Length: 184
Image 1 (cartoon, rainbow, N blue to C red):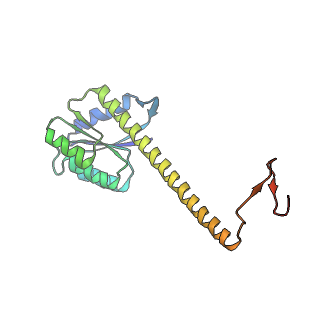
Image 2 (cartoon, rainbow, N blue to C red):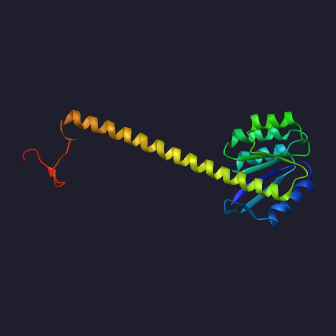
Image 3 (cartoon, helix red, strand yellow):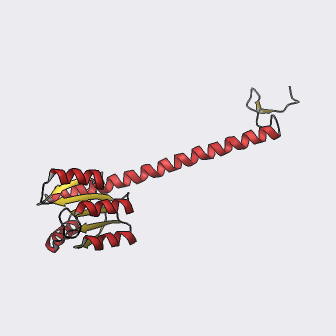
């Protein structure tokens, strides 16, 4: 289950978003995402929640009292860099959008009033993108572990060869058998 955090200072917007997410399946690349939706009207409380709980996605309004969406998402990026981040706003300020991209590394900007299909599709894409990033990270970690293991093995082989010259060399016979030193 994917935990989604919705942050908007307008309770009616949050209710509309929750209603939409509850009645519309969120599908991307043939994968159905089951959503656990948490809402906050106060960005500071949302940030406190993220300090204690893992989230998959944060959808935040841009303009809110106390802390704007860019500052909130930038702080969340520091706490949980793997969480996807989306800004939703009725204000199409290009400078704010560029700042959100640069500081908070948002996945996408959605304009209010939103198109239901576009919003659900974007949420699905953001969740799928997050999954792929986590899978890539796991594969990269596994690759690094293999390389480190090979390096350790190489050191061990060199040490064995120093202590017992020839111990790591195998003479193979034409039939695939192992040839001992005294065999001809």
